[in-house]
Amino acid sequence: MARHSGTKIEPDDPRYEPLRRGFNSRWLAARPDYIRLPRTGEEVRHALREAVHEPAPPHRSRITVRSGGHCYEDFVCSPDVRVIIDMSLMDGVYADGAMDAVCMEAGATIGQLYKKLYQATGKALPGGSCATVGLGGHVAGGGFGLLSRQYGLTVDYLYAVEVAVVDEAGGVELVTATRDDADPDLRDLWWAHTGGGGGNFGIVTRMWFRDLPQAPKSVLLATGGWKWAEVDEDRFRRIVGNFGAFFDRHRGGPDDEYADLFAILLLTHASRPEIGLIAQIDADVPHARDLIVDFEREINRDVGRELHPLTEVLGEHAAFAIGEAFGEQVGLITGESRIRRLPALPWTVISRVMGAPKPNDKCGKYKSAYMRRPLPAEQVSALWKGLTEDRETPREAVVQIDSYGSAVNRLRPEETAMAQRDSIMKLQHQIYWPQDQDGADHLRWIRTLYRSMYPGGAPVPDDTTDGCYINYPDLDLSDPAWNTSGVPWSTLYYGGNYPRLQRAKRRWDPRNVFRHGQSIEL
Image 1 (tube, rainbow, N blue to C red):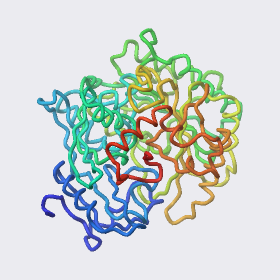
Image 2 (image 1 turned 90 degrees about the horizontal axis):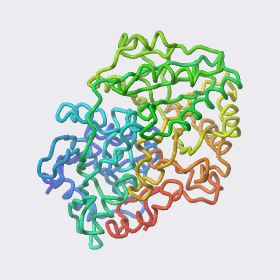
Image 3 (image 1 turned 45 degrees about the vertical axis):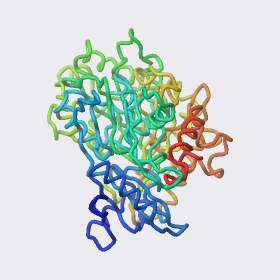
Image 4 (image 1 turned 90 degrees about the vertical axis):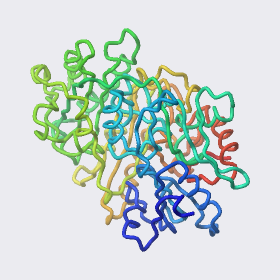
């Protein structure tokens, strides 16, 4: 039986120690009985059937799934985990003529995807910027990235999904669900994987995508920053306000010349050297260079300070602080003359300048918020206070503001499980600390900042905010000590789509085999 279930890694195997760990070193307590590494869907099915029928103590009974290992909370690695099924050996990306689609296996990482997909088809999937994130979780959570304002979310192209599921009697089967399936239960299973989050319904083995966009021939990628020593509160308000106002004006549409421009504002803690700004646009967009020149001018309007080269890692965007590592291939936003000389960056080297992950000896805490309009004054005040608190204490923290909207908002909230389809920005609040350091003060800092920005400790859906991103899970949203808004975590992530997700859960995981701290409830 074992030969049909993939490689079995037990505690005495030298591979066990690195494989039991994920991206976030906060979660090192997992000591599973074993880790399974399947290579095919059939091996996944056999491995899952074995795990389901093995005896397990109640306090240590969870079976969890990992593709890239980037889950921010302890959904995969915790003391109650008995078996981890690791999908990393299933990393194929290929054209499937029978399905008339491109097939991507769940263990392929974003970095592998961009290379394999482009070389095989010339196409692109508008996914994220961290090369080591696995597709199984990224897509199921509604992944987005630097091409999303131009092309939408990953799930907007998902045609079919293959999932290993467990029925009421404990039987395990591989099921393929498509978006146009005649069976409403199968359509629900497909739909649940268009933003319902990973580890909820079964084990995703393969995904098929149709109508993928052609990859850009080249892009313009510009980076720069403001020195914190030169930024007072008024300048800070100008930067944040200009960024929000720009994307409020340019929400996308057929007549919006900025519909394809994506940008990131990296608001670091004031103990760091600088605030960062990143902008990317397809070089074939008409007047692309003019657009980035004007974008810089708009974001820096009335700030009264020039942008400087980025000199350090900002959040998870290590590769953007590269100085001369790529010579003239990556540009600095310092004014019109510099951008006019900025060479277009071939799409084939994009993976070299994607955001690199933190080393996994760092612990981290993450929070998120969707914005339907620019940050109101009281949120900017809370940001300023939190980011400038105790400047003398080094704090590796950043509030990252990603541009959103445009092609992302072409679909209605109910068309996919991604409910947030009218936002203009997405925020990710991040903080990191060494593994050997007590994280209590860092957790206090990010929780205090978040609660001061969002009354009740959550960005409740209203005219300004629209909940949170399931791929940035935050267990504080389930804790009444931190979320006093009266709005449950399920509404914050899924809005009005949660009842349908529960219906899919009841049908496809009736035994609640796939569960974690914020899994879909039966």
